[in-house]
Amino acid sequence: MAFKLADAASWMSFGVAAAASVLLAAARASRPARAVVGARKWHTRSTYLPKLQRIVAAGPAHLQLLFDFDRTCTTYESESAYGVIEEGQPQEFRDAARRMYEYYHAIEVDPHMSIAEKIPHMKEWYERAHELFVAGRVAEGTIKKAADIAKVRLRPEFVEILALAEPANVPVVIFSAGIANVIEELLRKYLPGGRVPSNVHVVSNRMVFAPDGELSGWDADLIHMYNKNESHLRGSAIHSELCARRNVVLAGDSTGDATMADGLPHETVLKVGIVNTKPDVYLHRYLELYDAAIVDADGMQPLLDVVRAVLAAPAPTAATQAPG
Ligand SMILES: [Mg+2]
Image 1 (cartoon, rainbow, N blue to C red):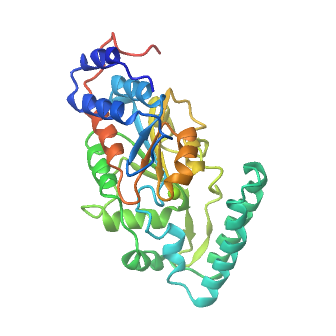
Image 2: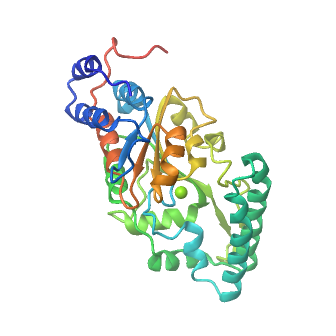
């Protein structure tokens, strides 16, 4: 891990205390990640520090935050967005959903199949599940009732990140293979003030309801675990704003989340993976896909530190501005 004192000296010249503390913490954490998993919650690889430096130097005006939702913004023990709705459905519905899960999840995690081989099955899973929801006549009013009793907890640092990002006008894209309507309801329920901030954009599968409040179908743009990338945002209202923000801090808890920023032209994408469980098994893989990894089922303090560091950065001078 190539952190040098010279890097620290040039970095300090920015005079950003928050950034400096993050970098020093990173230097301490930058020992070889595979050596000891132990109780350490923050692991980085050599790509982390230079990317963070570039993003801090460009400042908040060039920042976009891109988060997966289930078990990234929420804790590991939380129900998924689909689970929140399924929980309140009749036994027949839940049995059908469970049978689908047992069949398709085995394919999702099959170590002998490539992603390309899995994709048609995952697409079929989502299509069949969406048909089940329509056949089950899920009502619009169900979402609020289900959110009220949902076993879901937002990570406290995620709530804090949103509170910091809104006044800084930093767009936050929540990109999920779950259900947009449910995620928005959960945010309204659990965020202080009971509202989704205007800089937060939920990009996910969206239920469409008939005038009588009964589910009539789903938005045509299907997002599953292996096609989550920002090409879905082309043509959306926030597309041009996101294109103008060249740097991304991305966070996700699945291997497929590491490529969420693909599809839009970004300069630097700092990827933080969340290892919710079995770090002895998964941490090594996550540090191949992500620049840093948080081993924590309930929190994301290092990510909050990164966001604070970027938001505390002064506007770049001409000398520190990247060309173009
Ligand atoms: Mg997730």
